[in-house]
Image (spheres, rainbow, N blue to C red):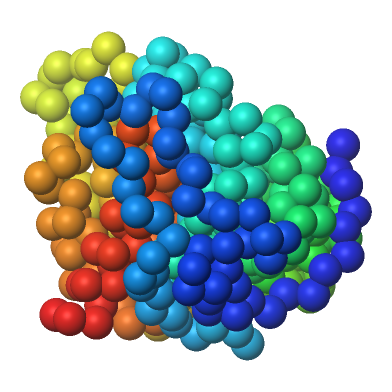
Length: 321
């Protein structure tokens, strides 16, 4: 059940302050200092010299070009059940709120919310404790968009990629188009999510009235027949989690060809990019998309401070390159 919370968006770049303290006075340095951290690894000096992720114009506001992704917060690993369960176990309500604050301290002022599990309660708590972020919410099949707008007052809604790709496969994209028209009348920005470059091409060619796209850079919704075609007749054990190295270039190409803002997601292949390749994947993303585009990135700072690491990488790429 959704909780109705009144709040006024408006996110200072350093809401936590340069000392890393939250609006309620608590310090965010303790996030990730888990007893499960790698033995022998000293705690990071969090809360000091925090860079701010550069921003982009989105609608009438400035948002960070890296938006906090939602999947790890509720155990959607897109890897295997054990990894997903590990995420869900670690991400208690306390951890979710602390990571939202941690991201905010680095200037990440937007969150790709999805209405699952206890997400409404966690978001309400974050707001009640003084947190502020713009919501770019993905809307799944069972969600009532009007109710989401009423209860959460998001900046933007986009139809979830899983839903859109099924419609594309079934040749029922007209239903997605009608959904976009309905959301347009709700007074929020309207977007289409997908894992398929062909979807963005289709929407663009038909001139839909949408504001933005969210595109997975890996096409993980291929049919079994499509998988066999790209793998020379082979089929893999987890057909819903196919990550081909040749995929990102195809999605980045269609993102460059539209003037509308785009958000690339799964740029790290849901954790499959080796550690030494992470900065390269971020660099490839930002070099391949437009200046008015961004990325959704999920974070799981159980072993290392991924929020700090990712923010510093993005800041370095966008300000020092």
